[in-house]
Amino acid sequence: MGDNTEVMWNYQGKERPDFAIVPEPGQESVWDYPRPPVAKRCNRLVEVRSGDTLIASSRKSYRLMETASPPTYYVPPEAVAWQHLLESPDRSVCEWKGAARYWALASNPDFPVAWDYPRPRARFDVLRDYVSFYPARVECFVDGERVLPQPGRFYGGWITSDVVGPFKGEPGTGHW
Image 1 (cartoon, rainbow, N blue to C red):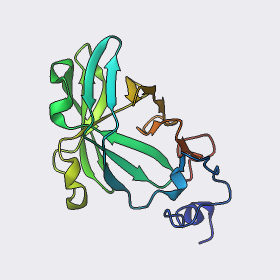
Image 2 (tube, one colour):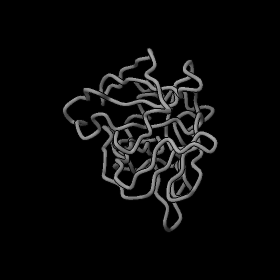
Image 3 (spheres, rainbow, N blue to C red):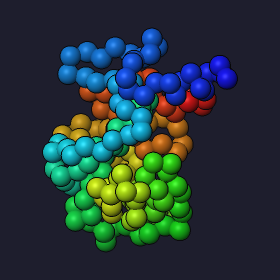
Image 4 (cartoon, rainbow, N blue to C red):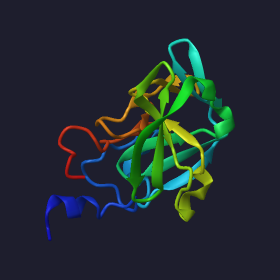
Protein backbone atom coordinates (compact mmCIF):
# COMPACT_ATOMS: atom_id res chain seq x y z
CA MET A 1 0.00 0.00 0.00
CA GLY A 2 0.99 3.60 -0.50
CA ASP A 3 3.25 3.17 -3.52
CA ASN A 4 2.92 5.61 -6.40
CA THR A 5 1.23 3.03 -8.67
CA GLU A 6 -1.73 2.64 -6.36
CA VAL A 7 -2.00 6.39 -5.86
CA MET A 8 -1.96 6.98 -9.63
CA TRP A 9 -4.91 4.70 -10.29
CA ASN A 10 -6.97 6.47 -7.67
CA TYR A 11 -7.52 8.91 -10.55
CA GLN A 12 -10.49 7.73 -12.53
CA GLY A 13 -11.56 10.93 -14.24
CA LYS A 14 -13.37 12.28 -11.19
CA GLU A 15 -10.57 14.54 -9.92
CA ARG A 16 -7.67 15.93 -11.96
CA PRO A 17 -4.29 15.44 -10.23
CA ASP A 18 -2.08 18.43 -9.39
CA PHE A 19 0.52 17.41 -12.00
CA ALA A 20 -2.00 17.44 -14.88
CA ILE A 21 -1.78 20.21 -17.44
CA VAL A 22 -4.73 22.58 -17.13
CA PRO A 23 -6.57 22.64 -20.45
CA GLU A 24 -7.05 25.92 -22.33
CA PRO A 25 -10.50 26.78 -23.76
CA GLY A 26 -11.30 24.27 -26.50
CA GLN A 27 -9.01 21.64 -24.99
CA GLU A 28 -9.61 18.67 -22.71
CA SER A 29 -7.41 16.89 -20.19
CA VAL A 30 -6.88 13.16 -20.44
CA TRP A 31 -7.06 13.21 -16.66
CA ASP A 32 -10.77 14.00 -16.95
CA TYR A 33 -11.36 10.80 -18.97
CA PRO A 34 -12.91 7.88 -17.07
CA ARG A 35 -11.43 4.60 -15.92
CA PRO A 36 -12.66 2.13 -17.05
CA PRO A 37 -12.63 3.73 -20.52
CA VAL A 38 -15.64 4.70 -22.62
CA ALA A 39 -16.22 4.65 -26.37
CA LYS A 40 -18.20 7.58 -27.76
CA ARG A 41 -19.47 8.24 -31.27
CA CYS A 42 -17.44 10.81 -33.17
CA ASN A 43 -18.30 12.61 -36.40
CA ARG A 44 -14.91 14.28 -36.91
CA LEU A 45 -13.12 13.34 -40.14
CA VAL A 46 -10.66 10.57 -39.32
CA GLU A 47 -8.17 9.65 -42.04
CA VAL A 48 -5.25 7.25 -42.20
CA ARG A 49 -2.58 7.30 -44.90
CA SER A 50 0.62 5.54 -45.78
CA GLY A 51 2.41 8.01 -48.02
CA ASP A 52 0.01 8.85 -50.85
CA THR A 53 -2.24 5.84 -50.13
CA LEU A 54 -5.50 6.46 -48.29
CA ILE A 55 -6.05 3.48 -45.99
CA ALA A 56 -9.13 4.66 -44.09
CA SER A 57 -11.50 7.62 -44.01
CA SER A 58 -14.65 8.10 -41.96
CA ARG A 59 -16.90 10.55 -40.14
CA LYS A 60 -18.51 7.65 -38.24
CA SER A 61 -15.81 6.60 -35.83
CA TYR A 62 -15.68 5.83 -32.14
CA ARG A 63 -13.37 7.73 -29.84
CA LEU A 64 -12.09 5.65 -26.93
CA MET A 65 -11.16 7.68 -23.86
CA GLU A 66 -9.35 6.41 -20.79
CA THR A 67 -7.70 8.23 -17.87
CA ALA A 68 -4.11 9.30 -18.67
CA SER A 69 -4.15 8.27 -22.35
CA PRO A 70 -4.92 10.35 -25.42
CA PRO A 71 -8.04 9.18 -27.27
CA THR A 72 -7.86 6.34 -29.74
CA TYR A 73 -10.06 6.60 -32.84
CA TYR A 74 -11.69 3.48 -34.29
CA VAL A 75 -13.11 3.56 -37.83
CA PRO A 76 -15.81 1.21 -39.13
CA PRO A 77 -14.62 -1.73 -41.23
CA GLU A 78 -16.35 -0.38 -44.36
CA ALA A 79 -14.16 2.76 -44.11
CA VAL A 80 -10.95 0.72 -44.51
CA ALA A 81 -9.28 -0.01 -47.86
CA TRP A 82 -8.60 -3.63 -46.90
CA GLN A 83 -6.56 -4.33 -50.05
CA HIS A 84 -3.72 -2.40 -48.37
CA LEU A 85 -3.74 -4.51 -45.18
CA LEU A 86 -2.91 -8.09 -44.25
CA GLU A 87 -3.80 -9.84 -41.01
CA SER A 88 -0.81 -10.20 -38.71
CA PRO A 89 -0.21 -13.23 -36.50
CA ASP A 90 0.29 -10.84 -33.54
CA ARG A 91 -2.32 -10.87 -30.77
CA SER A 92 -2.80 -9.20 -27.39
CA VAL A 93 -5.47 -8.88 -24.72
CA CYS A 94 -6.79 -5.62 -23.29
CA GLU A 95 -8.14 -5.80 -19.76
CA TRP A 96 -11.18 -3.78 -20.87
CA LYS A 97 -11.85 -4.62 -24.52
CA GLY A 98 -10.67 -8.22 -24.83
CA ALA A 99 -8.57 -10.00 -27.47
CA ALA A 100 -7.06 -7.81 -30.20
CA ARG A 101 -6.15 -8.85 -33.73
CA TYR A 102 -3.47 -6.92 -35.62
CA TRP A 103 -3.09 -5.74 -39.23
CA ALA A 104 0.02 -4.86 -41.22
CA LEU A 105 0.47 -2.99 -44.47
CA ALA A 106 0.54 -5.37 -47.42
CA SER A 107 3.77 -3.64 -48.43
CA ASN A 108 5.35 -4.43 -45.02
CA PRO A 109 3.64 -7.53 -43.57
CA ASP A 110 6.04 -7.90 -40.63
CA PHE A 111 5.11 -4.60 -38.99
CA PRO A 112 1.56 -4.21 -37.56
CA VAL A 113 0.00 -0.76 -38.07
CA ALA A 114 -3.56 -1.39 -36.87
CA TRP A 115 -5.71 -3.53 -34.59
CA ASP A 116 -9.33 -4.46 -34.01
CA TYR A 117 -11.49 -6.51 -31.67
CA PRO A 118 -13.43 -9.20 -33.56
CA ARG A 119 -15.10 -10.41 -30.32
CA PRO A 120 -14.84 -7.59 -27.76
CA ARG A 121 -16.10 -7.89 -24.23
CA ALA A 122 -19.78 -6.95 -23.92
CA ARG A 123 -19.14 -3.44 -22.62
CA PHE A 124 -17.23 -2.61 -25.84
CA ASP A 125 -19.34 -4.45 -28.38
CA VAL A 126 -19.76 -1.14 -30.28
CA LEU A 127 -16.09 -1.54 -31.30
CA ARG A 128 -16.63 -4.97 -32.88
CA ASP A 129 -14.48 -5.04 -36.07
CA TYR A 130 -13.82 -1.28 -35.88
CA VAL A 131 -10.16 -0.59 -36.62
CA SER A 132 -7.65 1.70 -34.97
CA PHE A 133 -4.21 2.62 -36.27
CA TYR A 134 -0.87 3.47 -34.67
CA PRO A 135 -0.03 7.12 -35.45
CA ALA A 136 3.65 6.26 -34.95
CA ARG A 137 3.48 3.78 -37.84
CA VAL A 138 1.10 5.40 -40.36
CA GLU A 139 -0.06 8.97 -40.87
CA CYS A 140 -3.27 9.66 -38.95
CA PHE A 141 -5.39 12.80 -39.17
CA VAL A 142 -8.39 14.21 -37.30
CA ASP A 143 -10.21 16.98 -39.18
CA GLY A 144 -7.06 17.53 -41.24
CA GLU A 145 -4.70 17.84 -38.26
CA ARG A 146 -1.78 15.39 -38.31
CA VAL A 147 -1.93 13.33 -35.14
CA LEU A 148 1.11 12.90 -32.90
CA PRO A 149 1.64 9.39 -31.51
CA GLN A 150 1.23 8.61 -27.85
CA PRO A 151 4.70 8.04 -26.36
CA GLY A 152 5.70 4.47 -25.61
CA ARG A 153 6.25 1.47 -27.83
CA PHE A 154 2.87 -0.22 -27.31
CA TYR A 155 0.36 2.60 -26.97
CA GLY A 156 -1.85 3.76 -29.83
CA GLY A 157 -3.34 7.03 -28.56
CA TRP A 158 -3.86 9.95 -30.94
CA ILE A 159 -2.55 13.31 -29.67
CA THR A 160 -4.18 16.37 -31.22
CA SER A 161 -3.88 20.03 -30.25
CA ASP A 162 -7.15 19.85 -28.31
CA VAL A 163 -5.89 17.23 -25.81
CA VAL A 164 -3.43 17.79 -22.93
CA GLY A 165 -1.62 15.39 -20.57
CA PRO A 166 0.80 14.39 -19.31
CA PHE A 167 0.20 11.15 -21.20
CA LYS A 168 0.79 7.58 -20.15
CA GLY A 169 3.96 6.44 -21.94
CA GLU A 170 5.97 9.64 -21.46
CA PRO A 171 9.33 9.28 -19.66
CA GLY A 172 8.77 8.65 -15.96
CA THR A 173 5.26 7.20 -16.37
CA GLY A 174 6.17 3.50 -16.48
CA HIS A 175 4.57 3.03 -13.05
CA TRP A 176 1.18 4.19 -14.33
